Each structure stands twice: as C-alpha cells, then as structure tokens.
Image (tube, rainbow, N blue to C red; front, side):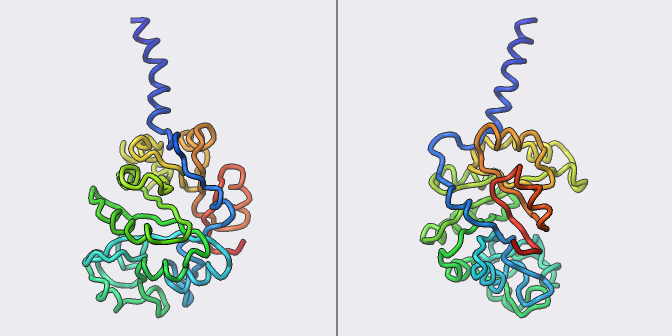
Length: 270
C-alpha cells in the first residue's frame, strides 16, 4: 500500500508535465517574431473605414510596421476568408455563419460601418507580402479539420514569416503530423474564471492538459490570467514562447512584459 502511494506521488507530477509539455525536440527558431508587436485583427477601429479583419486594417498595420493576428474560416464553397466571429451578426448585421454563404454571397455584406468586405486569406497574403509577420488563427469548432490543408496550401507558397495558432488541439495535431516545420501555438484562456464556461473540458483546456496532442511551440494566453500554473510551468520551465492577448492599453502592456515574450494588442499605438 505504501509503495503504491509512493509510486503515485512520483508518477502523477511526471504525467502532468508530460501532458502540458510543448515541443521539446527540433524546435523552430522564433527569434524574428520578437522584433514586432502584433495588431489584433489588424490595426483596426470598428467605428471607422478600417474595421477588424479588413484589408484596410491590415494595410494600416503593415504601414505602421506591426505584425498582425488574423482569423481564418471557410465559406460554404470552401474559400478561406478572414473573419473572427461564429456568426455574421455583430460585424455585418446579418443572420447565419460564414459557412452558410459562398464567398460571392458574402461580398454583399459590409464590415461594421465601413464599405469593407470580408477578405480572402489569399488577398491578405498578397497585401502583406512578407513585410511583417502574421499570426494566423484557425477557427476550428468541431472535429472537422478540413480548414488546415486548405490554409496550409496557401501559406506553404507564402514567402513571409508566419505561424499558426488555434484553440483546438487537433488543429495543432494536424500540423504536427503533416507540417512539422511550421511554428504552431496553443490558444487558451482561464475559461472558468471568465464565468462564461464550465465543466471538465474547459478546465482541461485552460490547464493546457491537451498539449500532448499538438506539442505547441508557443502558448497564446489571455494576458489577464498570466498566473495560471500550467501556463507558467509550460513557458517558464519547459521553454514554450509566451504570447499575451489581447492587450488594450500601454499600462496593460507594461504589466504584461514580465510574463510574456510577444504581445497582441488593440485600441492604442505602441
């Protein structure tokens, strides 16, 4: 009985470290990413002609010398477009999801108060043209990973610096299996402390206990919850690059510097 307890006490911490560990061998070099701050969904203001995830916002970010974070999902006709929300309601005032419409149908809608339309990922890549780095978030909601090869086909021909990130561990798994050389990041949040989520799954996700599936190179975490133990161990002890999102003031940026390596920001200029 005593031996079983001793074995359990020894093995449980080792199992925990195994589960949350990032990629430890053949890690890609992320040094060039450290040269930039990252404009969240482009350098945007939803009350202007440069709303989030618009060509105008990405053009402004490039011209200001910022890297940028952007979100990608598929249309009904499998075109990868840049759009964040699950539905079109907030940004376009329309019912339904991006996946309910073809790309051409989506061009009848405008973003926010602007005349900007939902852009193709391909067009954004042509606009940026490698001038600043990209953090590409894959919006994966189910076990359907078909977004991954479609996006990868475009990015594999892109000459600029980029990495991918997602909340969905199986999205990272796809890259781990098929495109090991691509830098990959696990997105997470202190879901249960946000009071919007509950249950074992969200505890597992906020504690990074699914890292063994995708073995991320970086952890992108809500900067307000830098104290989450698994995030600190993964980044401080096990060597994952730490990305803080979304920082909304210079004061928040200064507080985040002690806990994060890279910074995704919006609503102010650095």
